[in-house]
Image 1 (tube, rainbow, N blue to C red):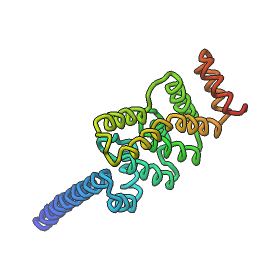
Image 2: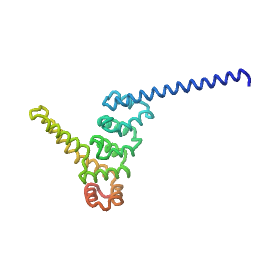
Image 3: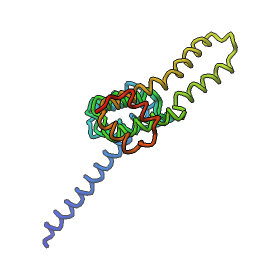
Image 4: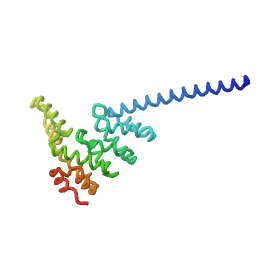
Length: 224
């Protein structure tokens, strides 16, 4: 090998190393910026949420999914709802992930947004099973997240002085929270009504011994 060939080979290797380093720096910076935008958006900033949503789908869709599935300590319920709506506008790329939001441990507004998106894009077998499981939990008296919120509201009222100006507002908010479980049931029935054949099929195969659940669903969901 001539000295010139050796020199060209070494320079080529050096250029590859430099290019790889620059690419790694650029990607690291991009991930840091993305994490910053995600964090501020989760905190409730509509400006940063819009910045995230405007990024390329390959970059923003995974972040929006993480946002929709996040818990309250990480992301506000309002931001999670916005993420669900943004994902729905993209055709709901990961329907199975959204189905997990039907559980009664998620805030009502998040569940309601998930229900609307799944009705729009189709409630499949997993979706039907999740809706039936949530209805079963409610019928067994398991408290949804809004019940816990109502309990916290009660504590606030008890600790507040009777002359507190916002007492009536607190009472109205507490009453609204207590009405949400019935609204949640209506949401689940709407999901089942959107796919009655699958609803009846899952009832027969998975809940055949649960007469109470079968009767309540068949009262609201038409036959196939």
